[in-house]
Length: 181
Image (tube, rainbow, N blue to C red; front, side, top):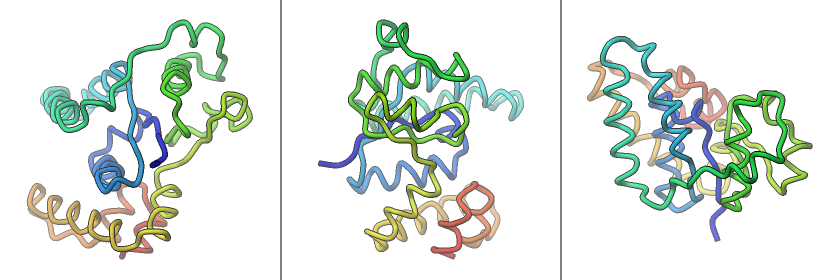
């Protein structure tokens, strides 16, 4: 059975990172989980991109929901009430992970999700770059194909001839960039 991983908003928000992570999930190498609140955080963060940022994010979220109908899990306030994290605004993420029987939380915010606290709940913490590298070591062809697909879309959407290493490095996936570049 594929691992179940709750994906934090900070991983879903950057497009290339999200497409790499979900491309690997599409290969059946893990099962993604998120909540409505996590998706809402993504939409609110996209406001920084300018007047069309939020609308674009909401369109991408609608596609995500259509493509991954079983990934969205309900809030778990009864579990959140008993949990503590350094940033109280992240307790909902941990609560949904616990309620969904996730194996890990994928986040860039290591300090906000202490490994000891997660371990008490039977969870691990993974960062996107490290996790994708581990999957690449076990399934190099699958990850290389996802990278090639994401690169092709980046060329098409940006009109820029990205190379793999530069694209993934910019997407905060430096180890994977080196492996695939």
